[in-house]
Structures are given as structure tokens and as C-alpha cells.
Length: 622
Ligand code: M6R
Image (cartoon, rainbow, N blue to C red; front, side, top):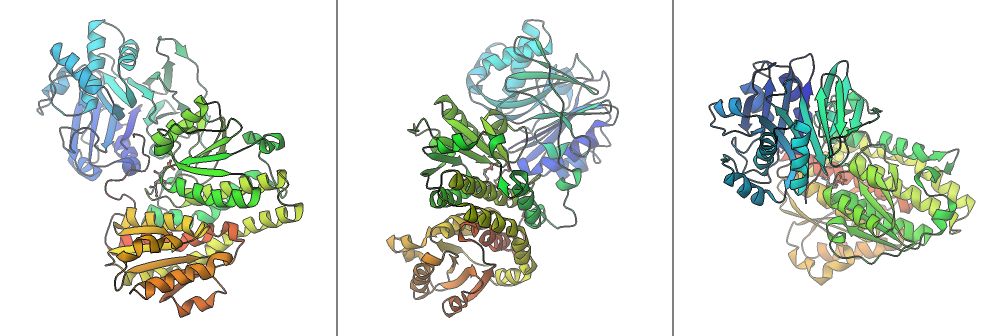
């Protein structure tokens, strides 16, 4: 979604804002804009359609905009087409494009989120003489703040509070008032925003990477809260205008972790960070060979009392849920249901009161997942969040949090967060299995030891990545690709197919191998690439049969299996082998070649790997 950055301090604001926005470009990038204030002077607003570099060129990398206080925005259009007019910041005056509207405006603001009742509010403002120059909901909010500010001759906190009571939807709002120089005002409901301070300077951003270079000391602004930012200081208010005290939190992420570190793309860097991310996540709960879950509300009694598990998530996080379902049901014998958050939230689910709802999210801000979490809480069901971003909305609202230690993930296509979510699922499954008497101590130790070997095995697969690159180069013109497998292999196919679609724009489908005959097989033509994933011993022969079926209809076959299954070469045209592991954990290895395939296909087609079209990293609106 959109990215917001704000700064007030000693340095020139615009270069800092552009730098922060560049680190948020993965959130949305059809247009961008800045509003900068130089002392008492009114805000100077500069906007452009397209990538951030256009705005950077227009402003000489921000150097042409003088002033130490400003707000910036990268837009991912929701209301109104991508255009310079619809780009943020928006102003409360009549923006003529000549700059006079900005000069007259009391309020200038940027926004992330969606204002659901913007039409009704626009009608109201039209009646009060306001004119609108854009099609955005943001312009409506900015003008509403201006309306209350002037009508009640009040202060910014009160005008913003009155606006928050009137608007429905989600928002992270960042504004400057002409009559309050050197101040930035922010407000938040259901959209991410953090505030950082360092050395007499204050920063605000939609996400941590934007400010990590400058500070790791942050405040989390809560839902329905307002804050005033001045150099090095932040004051928080509730809707009644009362001051709220907040604690400063230190973010542990290293600034370097949000840089490309010599790789051409963040995605490739993040693929290579998987061994460490996996090993850190294991080490966070495994102490002296035992899994410790007490800190996340899962002591023995709580584990024994779980009647059902409901895993709810979106996209790749949902795919890890599908893997986890197989593993928990097989090891711990607890019934598990996996649901897409966008479906779960509206389908009036019947949940057992002794159930456990596990929501999975890298960002911790995905709107549907957050709504699903709230629904589970409303129903009085215990909730656990598997989340990567510390202090995110989901992390704050869940009863307990299992943090994955993937570090900042910048590429839109998830890789290392996916891998750590799998690990979290395995760890829960193993501990649940022991506590519920489904495995003995010996098996418990074996599984934990095997888990510890996963990082090295991922490294081994990565050592041979050029072989996959070579194969993919020959497939650069593929039109349709099918991924087939059974059980956990099917779950991995879902992820392999998504990786291919989202960054290579190649149509692909994941199919449970046994389902092919029920319709999809009619799509197979001469040369159609079909990738069979076969890591589950009991299902191996069955998937081979399905591969033979498609081969006889012209498919070109790739097999992905463990070392030792060399007879696959009698069937497949090309084979990728992964190290052997306990079959419950095979997804952690088989996904790596599929991530690499998506990556190399995207590169070979000359696409923007890290920022695929139409997609945003965190989907903070419905
Ligand atoms: O931040 P979340 O894990 O909640 O995001 C969920 C999905 O939007 C995400 O996994 C998406 O599918 C990825 N782009 C896939 O690579």
C-alpha cells in the first residue's frame, strides 16, 4: 500500500524523506509527492506521476526544497487513477497547480488507507463551499480537518479528533498546519505507522526500513490516537485531547538488513538470508534441546486443552498454514482447519470455544488477517499470532505472539518470512505432539535435531542455484506452468506457483496431483511445463503416475525430489534434487528451488523482481 514518511529536525527534510520513501517503494509506487516547510513559510508541494526517481530528479534529490520539516508519500492508487493531481500530499485549499492553493491552505496531508464514507463527507464539504481538485478520499479528509479546525477555531489535536470521529475506514494520516510551523501531526486507525526519535530529530513512517538508517528508537502510535511531532519530541493524545504517556522501544533490526548488500535484488538477498532466518527462529524457542512455548501462552495445560486449531492467513502466509496443517495433524493429532482470512472474516465461522486461532503474517498489518484476528477475539477464542514485524497491529492485538526472526523483508515476494513461518509451525507441532503424548522423548529429540540441520541443507541447495538458472533460461517463453504434488508437496506447489505468477507474470497453477484428471488435464498441450514435487515417500509413486499421464499428453516435465530417487529421471526431462530430511520438514527445502525459479524467470523476462506490477508488500486495505 502507500508509503508515508515525515521528518522534523535539524537537517534538510526533503533528501531524508526521499531516502525513506525509496525504502518504502515496495508498498506502492504509481506516484509520489513531498510537502516541505521552511520555518514559517507555507508548505511547498511537489508531486509527480510514476516512480520515485522522477520526483527525485524534479527536486534535485530533494536539494532544491529548502526546509527542515516535511511529509512525503508514495501512492498505490485506490481512489482515483494514478496521476499527478491524485498524488499526495493533498491540501485543504484549491490546488491550482500554480502553487497558490498550497500557499492558501491551512492543512496539507498524506494518507495511507481507505476512507469508506468519503462520498458522504465530500457532499457535506461541498455544501460548506469546499471545491475538490482530485478524485481521492485523502483530499476529503484533509479538507474535513480544515473544516473543523476553522469552524471551532480550535487546535490541531481537536480538529483531527473531530475528523476521526466522523470518518469510517482505515488511515495513517500525516499532516502539517500552516499556523503550526515546525510541527507534524499524525493520526492512525488500522493502518501501520511508527514514530522514531534521535538526537533532536523526529521521524514518522509507515514501516521500519524507512527510518532504520536514522534511529532504532521508536514509539508505536495506537489505534485512534493522535500525535504531535516536534524536533526530538513526540506528544500523544487520545480522542478527548488527554495526553497519553508512551514508552520508547528499541528495534533490534540492523540498518544493514534493509540494504541490498551486494545482491542485485532484495529477493535474491533474502533467499540467501534463509539459513540464518531459520536458524535464528529455531534458536528463539529451542533451549537446551527443548522447545519452550510458555512465554507465548502455551504451557502444558494450555496445549492439552486445545480442541481444534484454526490457521488463518493470506497469500504465502496461508500457504505455510497449509503445510502446518499437515504437520500438526500428523504429529500431534489435533484437527486443524486452514482458512483464507478474507473468507474467514465473512463466513460466520463456527469455532470451538477450546480452539486456538493462529493467524500468520509477515507484516502484521494485513487487513483481512487483522479482521480475522479481531473476529476470533470477539468470539472469545484464544489467539496466537505468528508475526515478523515487532509491534505491528496483529502483534499488538493477539493474545500471544510467536515472532519469526526473519528481519526486514523488503522484496514484495516473500521468501525468508515464508521459511520462518514454516519453522514456527513445525515447532508448535513438535511440542504439541510431545505434550499430548503422540511422540516419545526419543522422537522429540530426533525431530528437533533434524530441524537444526535445515539451515545447512538450504545452503547446499543454494550452492547449486546456477543449474536452476540454466533450466529457467530455457523456459523464459513459457505461457502456462503447472505445479503438481500431493500432501505437503501440494502445499509447496501453491507457493511455487504464486512465486512464479507474482514476479514473472507467467500463468501458473498449483494442483493436487490427484485432481488433474478432474478437469485441468485438458489444458496440457505439447511442451506445457509441469513441475512435479515428490518428497513424500508414501505418495511418491502416485505422483509419478500423474506425471506420466501428463507426459503422454505432451507435457515437458521437471521433477523436484530428494537425493536417492534417481529413477525419477526415467520420467522427468529435468530433475532437481534436494537433501533428505524428515518428510514433515520437506517444504523448507523443496520451496527453495521454486523460489529460485520464480526469481530467475522474472530476471530473464527483464521484469522488476522486487516490485512487481499491481502488487504491494503489505495489503493494509481490503
Ligand atoms: O504480511 P503478510 O504475511 O500478512 O502478507 C500476506 C500476503 O500478502 C503475502 O504473503 C503475499 O502473498 C506475498 N507477496 C507473497 O509473496
